[in-house]
Length: 254
Image (cartoon, rainbow, N blue to C red; front, side, top):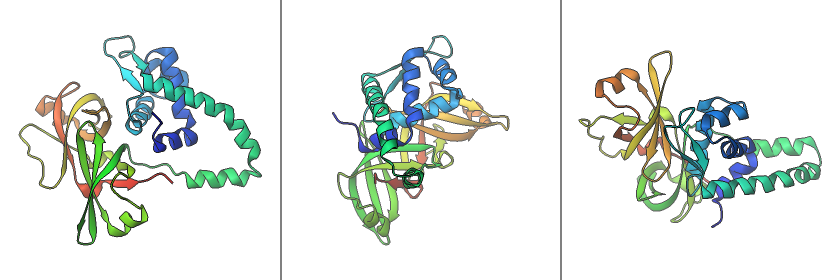
């Protein structure tokens, strides 16, 4: 099975995140891998979540109860991606030598932009429906999960979207809303079942929540700590999350 195009491009432009896989393989835990990579625990998990979401299957498998917050190891797919990265490292010097001047590398950097959106989900266009000036795009995320995006018709044409197109759905963490058992989802919103994996509380009393979806992909959301306490939910709790289709931004490989 070949790697998804978006993941292959990610390897090419963000090698430091792929290199984190090597540290996970060597250290056997996210905490120690983060320390070896010289980054924070949170930054390490953000990187791993992004890689897992862009891959067809999770690259890192996590277990609880070990030293340093639990163990972690590469999945079979993760080991394959790591081998690919190691081969790309061997080609990197050749690419740098082939660049005629430094400005060539600067241009390539500008063409491969990063995004501020915390959530990046790979999906396949499974439906396209016209709604006035907008198109409602259905995305199959895998594992039976599906979400919708609402974009302009011009955007559909510019991205050359069609049934079967592979896209990356971008969603800011602030646009993901957690729902308690007594709270029904808003009509027309995307609603997914998720399990809380981790809660990080900042000094201001708000929390960053890492959520696991049923297909192995993850989401990040912000919520007030009081909201979690009142509903007695935390790591291991299952709940629903919602976000409006108009909040879902789409990107395609270039």
